[in-house]
Amino acid sequence: MKSSGFTAGGAVDFAGKQQEFAAYIRDPENNPAPADVDGARMAMYRALFFNNVDGFLSANFPVLRAILDDTQWLALVSDFFAKHASMSPYFSDIPEEFLAYLQTERDSQEDFPFLLELAHYEWVEMALSISREELPAAKPDVESLQNCTISLSPVAWPLAYQYPVHKIAPAFLPQLAPEVPTFLVVYRNQEDEVNFIEITPITYRLLEIIQEQGNLKANDYLQQVAQESGHPDPGRIIAGGLQILKELAEKTVIVVS
Picture 1 (cartoon, helix red, strand yellow):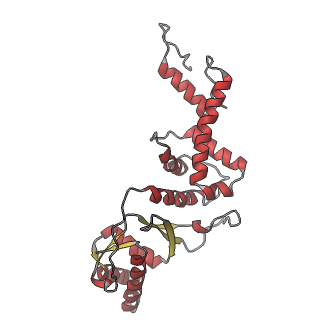
Picture 2 (picture 1 turned 60 degrees about the vertical axis):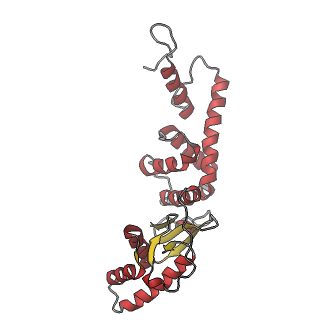
Picture 3 (picture 1 turned 90 degrees about the horizontal axis):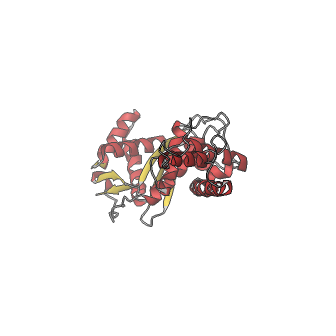
């Protein structure tokens, strides 16, 4: 039975009243408004909270918003607003909370099959743009890279997706995942611009090893990739990998020391 908002002694049960208020704000279709609060005022409160969340999600997931019509988007945001118990009080954390909702609570057969991956890709761009991690100063000369120590930039994330999320748009909405996954590295450069590069599976594996092991010589990483590849001419893999590392160093995806 729902709380009346009053204790047995007649004092206001603030916790109960707060729960009643919040339940209506979250899901007015399934929870009545507090009886002692003006209906127009409650509708205004509800609109204020919901519109803030709606606007924040629209701004941080622009592609997702663009591929959904108004009805689909409203249903998605309303479901998130009603179901998800956010663990953070900060508006800046809403995108991550929305991602958690899509991963663990969202259950709709009508969703695009790539919806979660697209949302993650858009969240990564936001997360890197506000990350407090700082990019170390670039080494001026990377020509003799093979014997340098290499690490992954703290603001560079190698990513693998089933769908080509960087190409999704209203005119491109794939219903089936391609046979070959999409590999990307999203990174923030020294001008604080967030960019992405589409990379090959072997480059992704190289960055994955660098991320996992960190602070080894470039040649050590290249030797491991060459060995894993099983290529009959490992020298070609090492030479190609070295050129890739130089390009990534110039873009500040990797840090050379």
